[in-house]
Image (cartoon, rainbow, N blue to C red; front, side, top):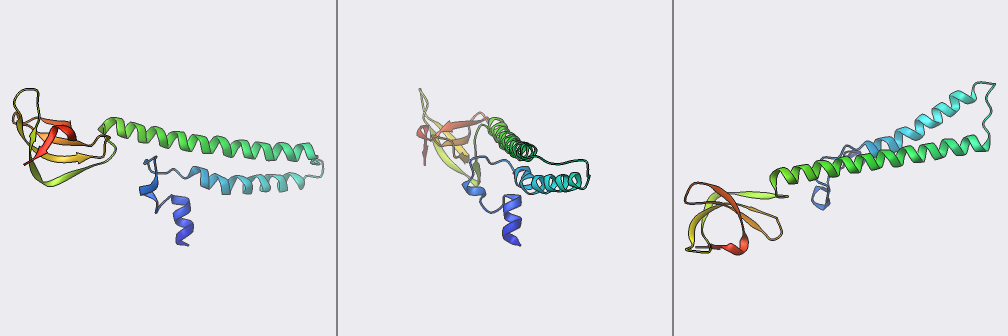
Amino acid sequence: MGAIRELFLNEGQEDNTVVTAPAFSITKVMAVVAPLVTALVAWATSQLKSVNFTSGNVTALIAALVGFLALTGAADVIARGLATSAEKAATGRGRWVQFNKPLAGRLELAGADESVSVVAASDAKPPEFLCLREDKTLTWEPGSKISFT
């Protein structure tokens, strides 16, 4: 039962995903529900004696089901991608870690270097460090400008 739960809730592979927004799982749910609803409607309609399905009608039902699943799947992926993009734009970084104890470092500037406390690191490319500067401001600085003392 655990494997089915993981499948429908997209659990267990969070580290391997590009889209990090929580999964809506609408695609997987609709993949199960849509054929059942289609079969139920087809059965209910066949109980009416005045309705006969031709091969064209059956083909249209199948095409409509496949089209519906394609649109639902595309909407799910697009929505999750937009949510991930908005999250990354809001933070400016994909993932980052805060240090329990700030690390002492030197920030290389055009003039004299500045002593900083490095309080966090990000997984940006190239890596960046969140520095508490002497004027008490926080700035993200590229790893190439930071040396640890």
